[in-house]
Length: 376
Image (cartoon, rainbow, N blue to C red; front, side, top):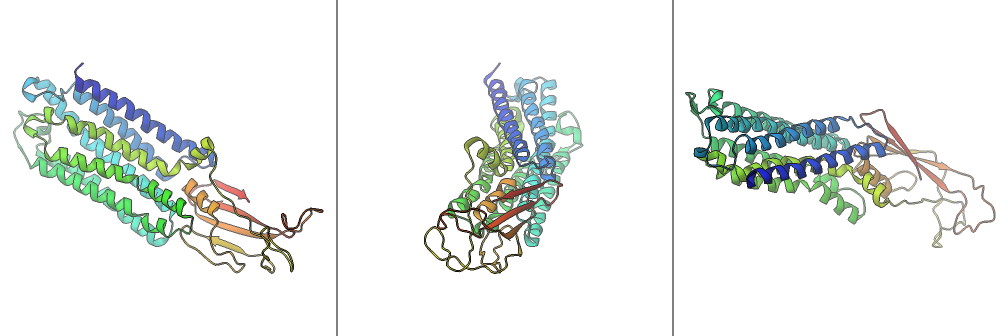
């Protein structure tokens, strides 16, 4: 076994293991939150994973059967034909794998940031993604006519400028990735949460930069491809053909894994207790609590939107915002503020004041039947 075969097989083994693990963690995160694992974005991710397996299998076929890594003059006609068929199949697998991955990310963002303006912007990005998928497949199908000229050099026909065609695919891919990367930036920056949480979220959603870098490197390798000796010049591109879509699937799953991390390393959520009292009561710092008359209202909250309630609540609790990011599948929050009589006697009023407010949180899943109820 030559070095090219060994390195591709090793790379495929590593990438299949990591990507499968990430998708498995995505499913586990859904189970932890008692949510369906068959939301639209999840199904799109699973389909992308299947096409990724196809890409990995195709990469092995190119080197084991098609002779990738060797000069074309050293190959038999049967090897050249099998190599060319593998390259042709890759175009379709690549388009579907990356396309479904991007659609999964956009759909998941729609569920997190569900304002009308954001949904409109996300549908535009999804439209560009579908257009890119069609472009990639059509260039693979139509760049050479008749189509069998893609794998049969003895067939009569002509091929267009293959370098320009495949470079255009990479350029539109980068543009599409940038659109997807910038899509959640404004809602994330406008969140009324702690700075460290905001920075962490921006970093998580900016992981798509890795995919853009991989695409840019792939663009370079595509530009310098020697189509007259493609079996030899394609080696560097073949590695990226496996790495890039694998990274994309990993990026699509990463924002949803916080419940898994909390389960393994412990929750990082913070909770806040709001208090009310009658005249003369104080909080634990000696400050007089605000009198809240007849607390019987319900406040509805949406991601990225801060409301002032009639009872003095000025922003969404950090714990609620963290929960929204953990779930990634939230329709709305309802905070029910219920006055309670203090049944505890003989306790220090400064440490546990009477008349405490209990805030119940109801998480409504927008497109599923599962509901998560929490109480602080």
